[in-house]
Length: 121
Image 1: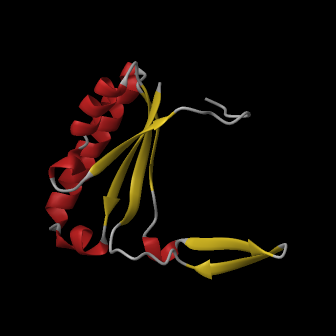
Image 2: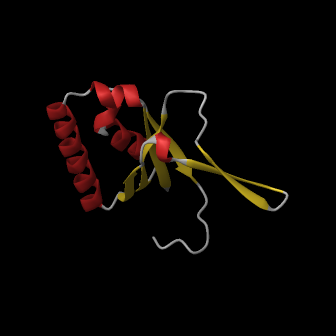
């Protein structure tokens, strides 16, 4: 079963980390990624750009409109995400608990019950 693990953050949180602590956090995250890539349970891991670089696309009347965004009602935004392939939810939650950011923020775990045709995994 596949699970999406999502880390949310905000500019205030990222800016509060001293430089040496940020470097250590990146090293911990890299170690986490290597560990679960080696077990075959981590299929993908990506970090997103800052929310200020995101764009929102809406199509109205067949015409696409692109705006700066997203326009969030919260300070937090999706900062990183992972795709796991594990036997069950229990295992997904165990792995999510090891995400280094879980000690300072929230990590969401969502089942991914359907795959689109054409996936390359």
